[in-house]
Length: 396
Ligand SMILES: [Zn+2]
Image (cartoon, rainbow, N blue to C red; front, side, top):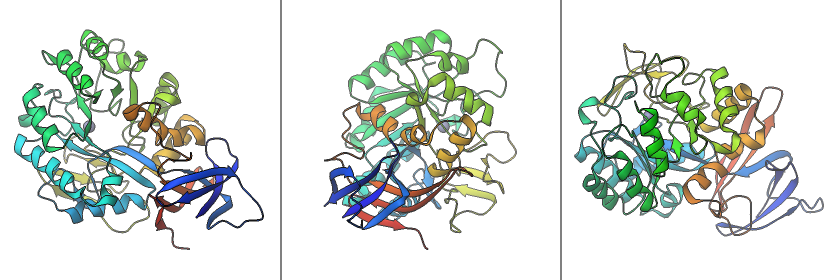
């Protein structure tokens, strides 16, 4: 199958030849040969990768027991948004509950297509800050100090699939714990933290590489000069993931973070929760108060997701194509850079520069075709291809 579009990396019109589940060749478009999909009016990019998804379309990775059908429903809903891979994110809870979430994801991965869509797991907590504000919506009674034995039980249940751990380095022994995770090939992110500058430096020296949803999971008020937000902003060894939904970060702050970090160190995430349903879908959660597992959340008309009666956000109802549009609008980055923030950057964060993905021969044939409306900065997704199969085509 030949797929044609302008490459988001260099605007060149290319033909991507797909054989089976992989990209066989990429070449300049041949005008005489009509493609199976796409054409001059399209852009083509790798399938998007979201490293932080708590749930979607009414299904929740943190409310076990959930069956394979729930995992499939999340995968399918995200494929319809161009997200060909994501990391199910297991957040702070009891040991038993977190283990059950991990096991349910691993069980669903027996299906080949689900395994391809879920290359790993993100553990966000329980080793985070107990402080109100930094802790965000994570339940305080389940926050605890780093525990290597417990982590190993999670990783064993995950069959080695935990790839990313978000923690706070404010606990005694955190730097040594981080060093062990890094030695085991796991990417360590700092987040939901009340850390000091010294604790942050020790964590980064031990190998921590990312700030999870920088600018969120924070006190409402910070010292104007000395605070963990500025410290992370200034630490060049830390990449940052961002929730660019217009609620978690105001436009000006999004721009400041993008300028400080540089496009090559930013990762767009949705941090989507079960209340999220995608921008053009009528399925999912209407505005109002909803119960998901242990958590009650309120969804506003503008898709702001918060803890009822508090100023604290509880995940998002964002989808990554909207995140791409927003980071272009708010921070003035290019389409190329914005796509990289949802493809190349997260692959590189997790797998290094030799990740083997993208629009290159031999890579998995995960890609999206879309039309880009520059005057409105709108991304109109038309097709998603996962492992060489067309898994989503927009209604015409
Ligand atoms: Zn969080």
